[in-house]
Length: 316
Image (tube, rainbow, N blue to C red; front, side):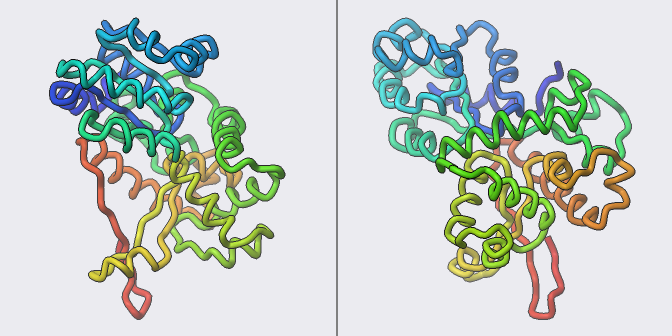
């Protein structure tokens, strides 16, 4: 296990706030990070049905048992607990009592905004960055990393990337999306993910995606919103001095891990990645996401844009 680059930010935030919230993609290492950084705190995961049921049926009783502090993992499974945690936190000014982790979803975002405002520091953990990965290996090939991805288990356990991402999509991406938007037919959504991978680094054309998938443009927007909230992908808005135009103009889309984009495109080796027609977009994805990780690991929420002039010349 390596020391994550964000660790110093965790200690600093825990010294200032009673609650530390760690958000990020599934399997980015949030649980491991919390338990390694705060090894003396009792640990509870709300993925465990018995723990979740106990906290849901008697939230005050559950929190009374852990009022001295605890790691509360996968809080997106029980966001309603945060409204009860507010009272526990307000009763004591002790810093760093509770470490909360979760995969950011709309209900969780709402619960944090309503109950934890001013009470929690929020940090975001992404998969390994290149500096972190160098602790496992000194050299690296960009196209090999595109084909493999950066999720910790891939490198800590030497897992096969194709099998890992197959399970990741079925277990997390499709499950989370089904829970949030109640998909009846998974096939159009799977096609949508593949089409997005083929458009990585390009401006989003909602109409074209709508026509290709056979669903409405509003459905495409909804799917994109859910994937962003679940940290599957992120958008890079265009730069305009007029803020309103930044909101209205089409962004570029990137995957949080380029390995997931490569998986959807059927790329499973560095040789495939190096000769694929979309290698430019995938490499761009790799570069942009590393800039994002560097900022998040310093506790900074990055504000990145791309610039395109009237002649189509572009800078990211």
